[in-house]
Length: 201
Ligand SMILES: CC(C)(COP(=O)(O)OP(=O)(O)OC[C@H]1O[C@@H](n2cnc3c(N)ncnc32)[C@H](O)[C@@H]1OP(=O)(O)O)[C@@H](O)C(=O)NCCC(=O)NCCS
Image (cartoon, rainbow, N blue to C red; front, side, top):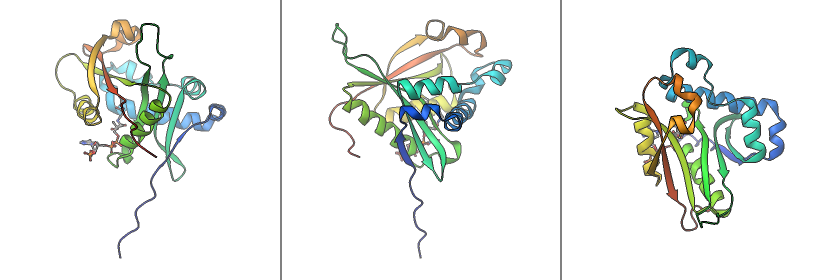
């Protein structure tokens, strides 16, 4: 007899009221900080690493209230999350409305099950429905040489249809990080054009 498939994770866009649930906010904050320390902790000098937190409860609270935070939950635990932030409607210069992905993390014990792909697809679809033509994200990337995780991410996002479009200097984008960076790095901005109807779910 074959084993039954485990139930898939439940993905939901948190309602703004979720921002006043401290244990939920704390669970998301802990997940994101854990995952980012594993993924890019080696970009920062040791004292910074100990203090470095990718996010904090106040920021997560603000993201839930003002933007959109999606969680993937399984057996009562949050095992993934992602944020969608949408810029103002088309500006006067006619630039297309852009959605930004961020705070994207899948618990390390839950990787490679397709959950990261599902979360990105759900967010892309919501962005399309809200009039976005472009989805954008940034990856902290060393200016020279490889990095096992960043190289993986490059391939991962390219399979998802994202292409690098420009680089931003850390000194301009996140100047407070510069003193604590262990290697010359910049932000590589990736974009994907959200055409067609996309995923139906
Ligand atoms: C990037 C990340 C979200 C991917 O999540 P995930 O749930 O493991 O990814 P998925 O299972 O949806 O992967 C989809 C594809 O990538 C492949 N893949 C996933 N992890 C892989 C790995 N370590 N090596 C090779 N391929 C991998 C899967 O096999 C799958 O390929 P397929 O569609 O051809 O079968 C996750 O690795 C993560 O949380 N990383 C740390 C935080 C981070 O870097 N966030 C992004 C910052 S911009």
